[in-house]
Image (cartoon, rainbow, N blue to C red; front, side, top):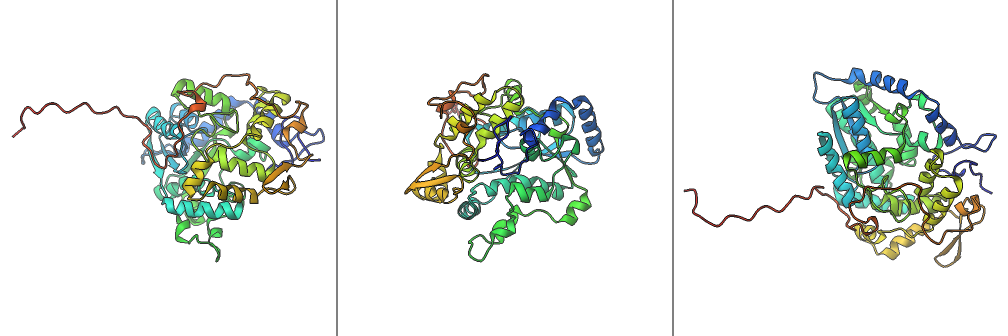
Length: 430
């Protein structure tokens, strides 16, 4: 029987590694307790002291802020621009799996916060080639996005000699309690490789049997350590200094800055990954097949910790959504240039045989005792209908479930009105 936290819904199979104390409480829940015990006013003062030396009178930018069209970009910029009074260069890596809402959110934050912005576009043929390779070899189509989002800000910092990068929350701290807030952990290449990139650096993609070339990986290579050291570059996480609460932050950004959410097929949270088709879809299914849990369990466990869900409510949500089919797989198969049946076959190759049994060709069932949510709480099996949330989720301009399905590789994000008709010819200027 898999070991499971007695408070949240995480099991010992968490991809980042997790430990349990003598009371059966996981390390993530224990570190979360700091959110209610630390003096956050003092921590904010410390953040102000940390960033003060980086206010630059001799340069245009004080720091770099990486963003996407979802997650915490609006909230980070609200803190950096409006509260800290810094002048950031905002950067983003184009994942190529963009939703209309994600493109609109990127445009919105550039306008709302009046910031300079750089977007990294890699040759789409290269991205497809790498995506196919990492999907087949590692069961992860999302490697280019994970690598690009974590290296592009560092590349820009080195190139433009901006020695401070400001990130949002640290995933390892928030989910599994890998660090304390008081450790004030900072960005590192080692964490990026071991956890963000599941141990696979750009140079590892160019094996003899791979069609990925050295040239293909240039945009994903980390700058030289000597360049980073010479710049004395550091990347800090705001979550060490601010009581990080993603749902509360998203609701605040919807109300104050017009952030947009998007209906999701496999989770109740419409805000976290509203910008991307692949992450809450194919990437989430692969995570579920390999580790036995998906994004909805991350979010439900988070809401247990904040006291907005009890364990039974969370288990019902997880059980319902983890049994849902992913949406938009046809869009991703079309982007990859493969039949959807082929994509399904490749995905099934990566099922963990300690969790799944193939009872007949292409028919799989989950093994008992592997941490299915309906095993963790007496909820009467998988719910037949979507469980109700105890809070409202504003932020969709139309009914969320009827959101436009259109994979956008590059988009402007702002719908400009049609120009007025040309006046009737009344003679020229000459």
